[in-house]
Length: 214
Length: 214
DNA sequence: CATAAATAACTGACCAGTCAGTTATTTATG
DNA sequence: CATAAATAACTGACTGGTCAGTTATTTATG
Image (cartoon, rainbow over all chains, first blue to last red; front, top):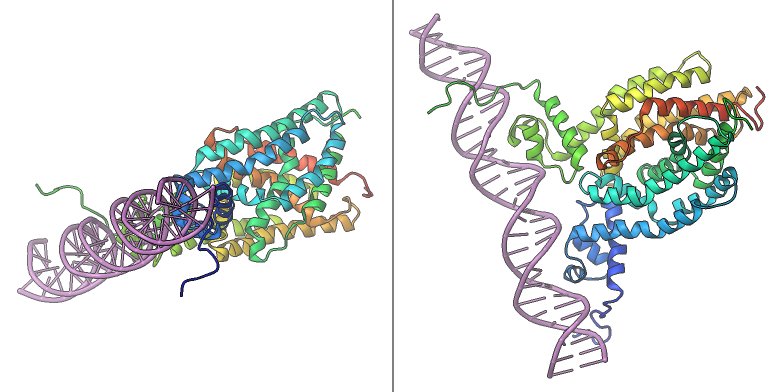
């Protein structure tokens, strides 16, 4: 009666951590930190709960790994996309639309953003990592670019940080919308047309009066 | 050795439910649903845990009450503010800025929004209530007003629902920002200047080319 | 067969929900 | 108007279930 063929498990030390993090990402995204069960994470990673504890000391450590690894791929992309581009700001922003909508639709960043927002009070240090390493950098770069265009008289005066928020908010809200209300049956927002239309609207408003000398 | 003076408790049946809901609102806002402890809620309401269960059957019931009661005051305000205003759309939107920034700074709506987002997967019926009764109504009204202005040739063509999202997103993001990153030490966004500047930017973009005949 | 990887049964802390008993308040009675 | 009886609000110790984390044991592999 012994299961003659298939072995009961494989020994794959090298692959386990990322498999566990991937499974944990899904479960945390679906349930939030507290309601996520380690048995679920282990099962989805194709492993027993005990095996999880060979690679991570606590549930919080797994959560930390999920959130921190969720930043890294974007960190590089954001830096290379936003900094030191010699093209004028309108062209740069128009090029940003497909980039952002791809990020929104094809990467798990939305799920992570939702979890970070949901658990910010319980894990302030993770919210800080996201803020300091990704969000503040991106927002700061945009703010500086806008301030530069204002100084050159190409854009209307006003608080450039607020203008930067005006620029990126709809894409962020569309992510939250997808994670929160689309599962409920709400009509989704198509990220690429939304981003294109919003950026054109924003540019049109910014390049025009009052106060700009084009 | 008997405590001669103060009585151990007061009987205040009529006031208890709203006190419990108020306390629960705070605790859920700080911790999320799962991490909130009923002992904490009870203690903050100045009552024992047993007393909570005289008024609510389960923890979920308390959460439901918090979220549902969080809508009601806004429901009326949104309806009266957005519907059947005879003034032209730009004036209406300019009037909206102080209204929205007041809502953001002076009411607990921000905390509720964060909790609804965080718990949407675990409580889809509450996300649906918020969506159907408040958010879809507000967004739909704005969308219709924009579509009307487009039909009259007063505003640029394009998807009016996306334009409506462009309009309200920065205020929503500023709320999430306050709840998520300001406790971490991030610089806050001042809602009133933000709303004013964003609405002017939006109007300036919407009233201008391409395609509008002013 | 040595040993590292993985399992599965186990432990203990925590917490939602219960309930027997206590205290405040109201009502009935001399 | 006193006070005893009745009632309703409230308390807090307790229970049962869940789940993070541990450990004794089994299994794969060089």
